[in-house]
Length: 345
Ligand code: AHR
Image (cartoon, rainbow, N blue to C red; front, side):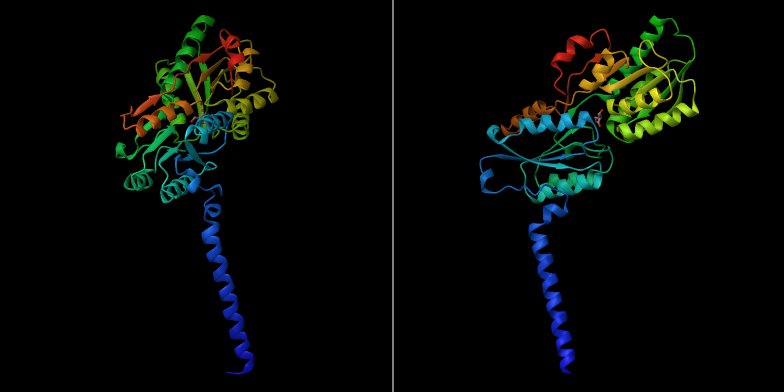
């Protein structure tokens, strides 16, 4: 081999060596980073703590931020817990990666709020085989075997949809136009999520009882203000005679209200369009009070204490209810003002 070839060979070996070292370092120290997980990890300091892995589906709404805060507030070190929080940024694949990472870190409990209902059997089976109890929160999972999760904490979203329908029934009766044709558009949340499925089903159950309720269109705004504004704008162009907007969360309502105002229309008890919203976050309740939103059906994000209670019981070997519903109410101009001062989110 010539001297030049030997030098080239040495160079190639050196490059391969350096690249291999880089991969090794990245795989050991950068694992969490590549998984999209916080780099925070736990070690000896957690010996006396109960370690919880929490996969939150995203941060798409004010409701979601309040939900994350509620869970983060209760699972604190001075309470005996160490929480590993992962934000999946609205991607199911990120949630699956996070849950697998929790399993490999051998956490004591997994909490997760699933994006949509389908697609969890395999990863939940892995958690079960690892002996890690899973608490599903907020939205539900549709799995073949319900023993894949220990308990669920959240809202009855079908009942929320029904509450909206029953309120509308009574409202149009009181206003004296219960028998007139009513044109309705629905801004749906993330398709396939429990909040969307339940609210759609609940409202449609009531709508089906009224031949004069015309659902002109149901379209997803993905629970975000920006997309809902676009969808509402095109609905207004397509249907100039909308009487009622049902918007499946407050963030979408904020976007839709902008589109409605830009179209020169008004909303609320004295407006052109009746607006029904869901969640009842503070900013939306202020719009109920000021007369821009007619009804806000509460979806309670403060689930931290309920989840804590479930986990405390499990830690003490007690049995827990499989399904745990949080309490919720509805807000109109009649009752909103007394509630607003105490609203924490
Ligand atoms: O699953 C609960 C829903 O998800 C809330 O209504 C919405 O605001 C959130 O994004």
